[in-house]
Length: 115
Length: 115
Image (cartoon, rainbow over all chains, first blue to last red; front, side, top):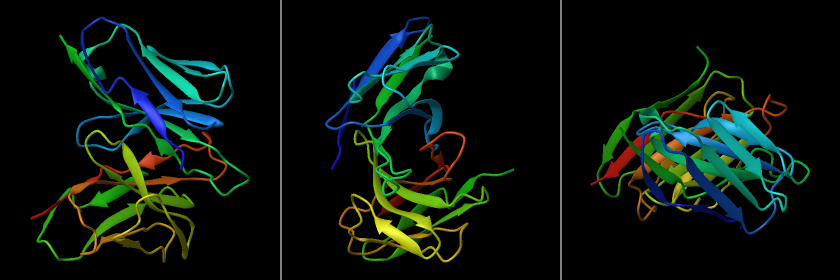
């Protein structure tokens, strides 16, 4: 099956620093999603990407859909303590309805922000 | 408020017992999903259902069973055949033709501990 490799596995940063994480896939996707999970809760969608090369921002977050359709990255600028959590990339390849909504998730990046 | 509820939040069971995790949504979503989350492994798909009375195996279905008798409910049974059932279980739902293609909405999760 499809596999996603997400890196880094964890990051420890100071408040105010920028953060970058990325995902690479063994096969192409036509949708990339980035989720954040707070401790003990379910993931919440941050950004969705649909076209190769697309660059999308949501406040301090910026994500890009790689040209090859096999990778994506997420940047967080000027981190704050509430950014702590686990960030997941997820990909979807909808092959005419059989895979609609079926996401493949990366292993997650654990972010710790020191005040 | 619309959303996904999972109950209970924490569940303890003795080894060898079957246990059923509840998932209810009032979002009128067509598709529902069950994921298992272990540290460092991201989210792995157990079962998913795109319509009432139909469901498909995900990547790690062995030792689990589901039913989808109602659109709003998708209970997951962890059977005694599941060799390592202690984990955090997440339920999600999505709608075809939704605002964000492929977006899944997650419940708060159930942490199952088998003693």
